[in-house]
Length: 218
Image (spheres, helix red, strand yellow):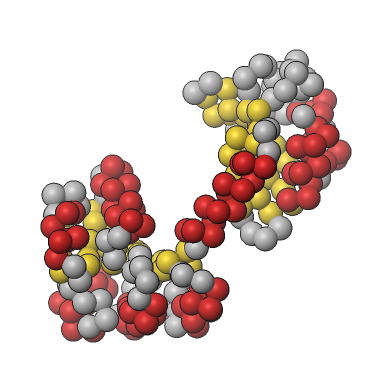
């Protein structure tokens, strides 16, 4: 059986998640207290319902415990977000992902059992800052406070060389995990692949090591 997902809160964040699930062909239950928002998604998701997620009986009537993942995307109402998360865990939902407004909100969510806490504004802010501050980095994904993944374009300095020639791990302490060449994403046997103009390297490592590679390696 395909996995089933529920999204609680149909604001910009929750709505965008519903749209992506729909594109992926997933079964999605969309929940919001605002009937206008529910109507907006009625023809997009599998089912859209008006319900108060802080009402235990309302969640039970929706069979919420049968869903593999529930994403709590409630906006400004922190109290509702926390109570909804608590009720979902009490109902036995194994995967509860919750949007946090700030670090204090995140701490409480962690204590009431949220399986994953999402900081969309903070994460996107970090990503944009890295992309704007560097003319070499094409994409950036923060994994933790200390580790990241970056995508960086091969410069003239690296063309006609291989990963073995550059010895990225020994010289810079980070690892090349893939090479993007046009529409191809190469992950196997890339150490001896001769780099060409237009290639992009995908690297993982400590932020300080990635910065060193950005400044010196390319």
